[in-house]
Image (cartoon, rainbow, N blue to C red):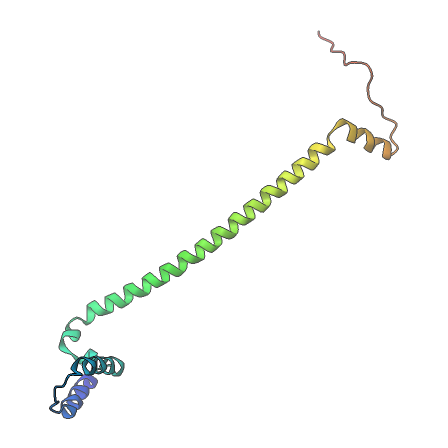
Length: 131
């Protein structure tokens, strides 16, 4: 609080009567910006009374920004997982096609002949014996 009292005292000493001219709007904007940069805005009684509300707004804005960053991170993770699912789906389709092709009768016969096996394809139909 000593800082606030010092600034108020300093502001009273610096205040001089001003001449009102046509550039009053520009000078008020410039003065407002200077007060904001210097921190003199916080010395005003209205701001000091509303300090808890201002603090609450600052905290809520920080929570909002943090929430936004977390949301964007989750979106990036979801996108990467979707790409991974698509890649895995294509890989499974390729593998199932290869297995299906390797399980065909002609491919099995060719594989047996190339390995030198003496197995042959049955020429007689299967006979089922019932009790």
